[in-house]
Length: 67
Image (cartoon, rainbow, N blue to C red):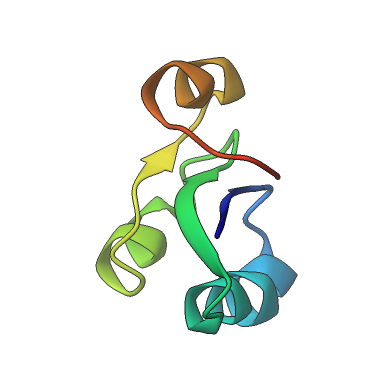
């Protein structure tokens, strides 16, 4: 199973990429990363995923195979 991080949580990611990764049986979405905190509430509340504003911090805190 591949562990993913989504970098850039704009409209396309929120509508398509994040739900697709969450629905996949072959992958696990570990963290979402975006420099702006604008999508933070939706990601944490709707998708129940951790959110980071720094890729460097996400690398320290989470283990993922692909972005």
